[in-house]
Amino acid sequence: MNTKEIYDLLKAKFNGKVLAYNEPPKDAFIVVDAKSLPEITTFLKDDGQLLMDSLVCLSGVDYPDRFSVAYHLFSTKKLHKTVIKVNTDRENPSVPTVSNVWPGAVSYERETFDLFGIIFYGHPNLERLLMPDDWEGYPLRKDYKFPAFYHGINAAGRSPGTHRIVNRDNYA
Amino acid sequence: MPESETAKQSEGFSELSRAVSTFVGEELVINFGPQHPSMHGVLRLIVKSEGEIVSEITPVIGYLHRGMEKIAERLNYHQFMPYTDRIDYLASMNCNFAYAATVEKLAGIEIPKRAEYIRVIMAELNRIASHLVFFGTAGLESGAWTPIVYAFREREYIVDLFDMTCGQRLTYNYFRIGGVADDLPKGFMEKARAFCDYFEPKIKEYNELLSYNEIFIKRTANVAVLPPETAVKYSVTGPNLRASGVKWDLRKNEPYSIYPEIDFDIPVSSGEKGMVGDTWNRYIIRMREMEESVKIIRQCLDKIPEGDYLTKVPRLFKAPPGEVYCRFENPRGELGFYLISDGGKSPYRLKIRTPSFAHLWVLPEISTGGMISDLIVAFGSLDLVVPEIDR
Image (tube, rainbow over all chains, first blue to last red; front, side, top):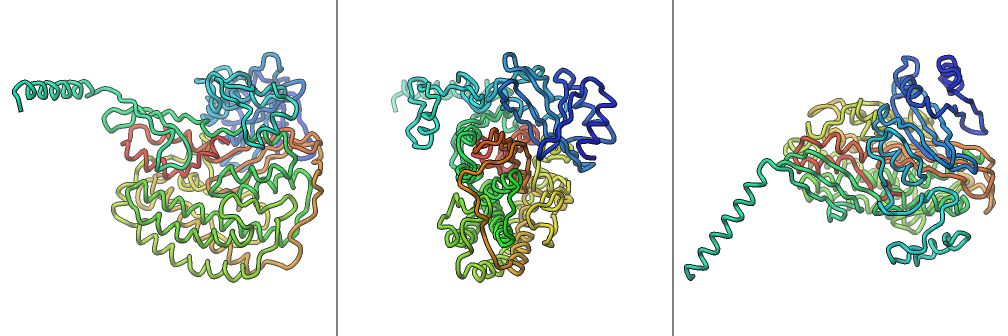
């Protein structure tokens, strides 16, 4: 099944919760309502036609007006794949967890929370993963200000690469 | 010895024995890492154990986090290429390959046939080099010293080939968007062929030395079993997935580059010495993959056409707006690049999906309830590379 067929199937089953089908220049994706994500993902995993048993990749994206989370799904039994996306506002970003559907999502969601500040509610252990526990801000946001100091250490760094990146426009 | 001192000493002993007796039946927390001489990279495992039995494992990562995804948003497409070398330093060529091909797919760049062949030769040579390090450390972690010496002896030949091609012995940065940096040097073909002839019998030697060694089998068979359902749930890919009996290889199932034109097999474990998905299966699958890689290299060397090795791509080219997710079969599993372009000269977002990141989280799943010494063996068998987890 390709993404269009999966979209038609989801549209028939969850009318009103499946928001859009997009055919951008390269990869097609389906946008669904954030609140209905648990039921839709459970359906995607369990339905006999779909059997999307593997969450290949979960990535957060910071758009100027919203945060978006992309789920790249794949079925090892049916050998088809698709992309599901949810949008959430930048002020109060929150998306339900899918870690009860795919246990692999636990670490991916922690990473996305750590770097974007998106709250995955229902997550068993939503803590910092890559950054220190007391790190301020979410580094992969577009408006992130890099701190000049961390615990008295010059966090801007001495290596030429870091320096250039930090100094370009957002040295706090 | 004066009597008072003897008394003091015996008091000390009894205190010690009291302390020991309070440990019995209690949990002990052991920190593995962040740095450990037998491990490449910094990874910390907080292990709770009861006696020698592991009851809980909590991996702690982030010590190596370099913010590569953020850096990608600040550099143009060409400039990010050397950073991909550092994702998986044992398989830099494969990471180069994946990134270059992802950008090419998004920007619609056609690359010359000769470049495709060179790329596959390099990727497969690097796969062998990476699996050789695995073979060496797998021996080391189960208490055998000889394999690592053998493995590095053979790896040296591959590193020499890379050295003559691009002047580097690690972090090669040989691929370019549009092809490869330079044509194959004089004498490369002969040397690569000679390597294949030299290396193939060595695999048999390794099998005699370690794979079918009675002690090694006792240490690894039926240890840390990863059933196929668990593997799929945790997005485990590559040799670790195939060791669990799932026949899935991106080179065959979602072929890219020139892989469809090449004849090779995908080794899948069937539980020869123990259960499907145990440590021994994860080990042997890589030994068999090396044989397949030799096959691929031989065919590429025979078929490689003459012609260009690089399409000229402007230094500041702009990829059209859109997004693409490309997946590649790296030595450790599926490496995916999720690339979003807004039409600018640098990626709007580049998410790097690395195999080790997914594999790390099955370690608690498969090692809990086993012995601490088995945890080390299981950890080795997953073939994790820490910079790839942290990025």
